[in-house]
Image (tube, rainbow, N blue to C red; front, side, top):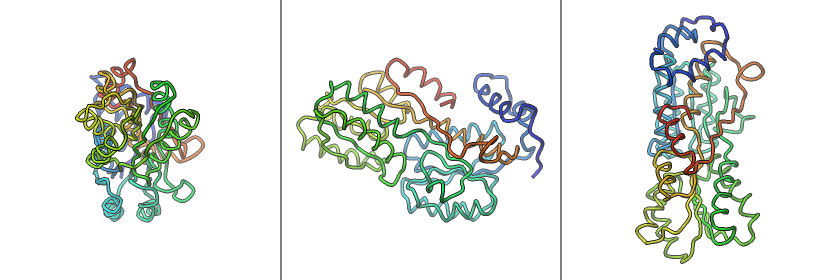
Length: 336
């Protein structure tokens, strides 16, 4: 593979060019190539996230492909299908091939450790996205790009507590229990609710990111519980699936909060179906993985001092009616 020396200005110049790209219609891929000093030949990258049924994952794929085109990276996708066993098969297949770099969001912690170690041992930089493949002291990934999930869970839960006046009943519908992002969101929820002694937690059944399962769960909840003041969901897809059940049963008085701030949720916040969500920046994480991989391969950027940190926090804001429109614009250009 032919490589060039990094351009003058190094990583800062690369990031400046990348950040400007969506805003400068006349900036071509070839101009970016000159700015970055990337390989003259396309890089080959393999990506996988939890499952493209989830809108967050689908948006991440689009963002990775968008930034890949700008950075001269051919992205091959290995769908996790929201199933740990099927994702493991996909990553075993990935590990049998040669890549310039790899980026993975695991469906569950510890499920992909062996094939990921094989790729790392083969000299392939592996970028971990959103949820831990394994604890960072157990697998030597190039970097881990993720939001502060406890902040996400706590901030939306606090917004819900304020909306119900600090008293009433609440349900948390969790994601997959083995997903470290879901674990952090649950801790954030718990940290807030314990400060409100007049709030009762009715249920915390996981929905596993599966909207069909969530619809069944919430059909049961609405039959069992005549009064539900608020509901916190670990992602927006589950929140909106539950809202459809609430609407069918005439229970739209429940204050709803979600995570991810995907476009359908932004519309729901704007029109009042959802009270709040928080941005898990899919575009920033998946696009950042492209940039981290390119920097590792082309510029030889290492993990640690003067390079990329082992853990990069990629937080996005809480989204309400006040900032929903701007968030939508930023996502449209794969910026957050």
